[in-house]
Image (cartoon, rainbow, N blue to C red; front, side):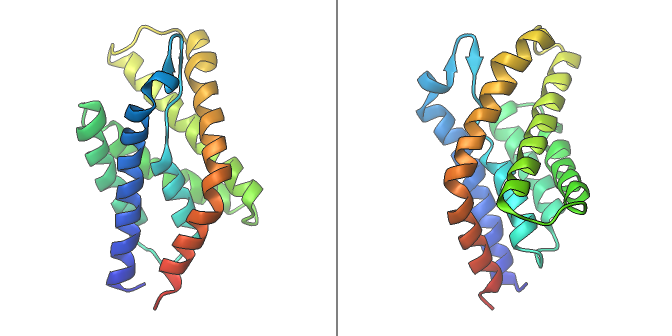
Length: 173
């Protein structure tokens, strides 16, 4: 993969990261209704799809680390959480993918597993740092469930367009 292709992959992942916050802000009345919260994770969707459809992109973990740092500085204010978790999602995806043949259903299942692990780690870190007092029995139905449902719907609608775009970027040169 040449520099131009790598640049477009990084731009795509950056735009997805910005859409995470922008869509969450634009639809905050819908996504954040007490007691439920739905969190958009388009960045993780981008990482999973780039892993599968741009196999020549060798620096995905490095990009995940850097975007995690930006994600932390833009959205959380606590540096290190997503900087650690985004590369972890790449390693988890790589580990799970070795057992399956890539197909839309498999990729969707891997995406949901990644989201479950990500949200669970974020909840655990927030609990450890004293940022939340929410019980696990409240976290699962009020945050994890709605988040998985929203991101599954986004996966269904965005899988084919993003797959085509990433495949096209990967095959340009």
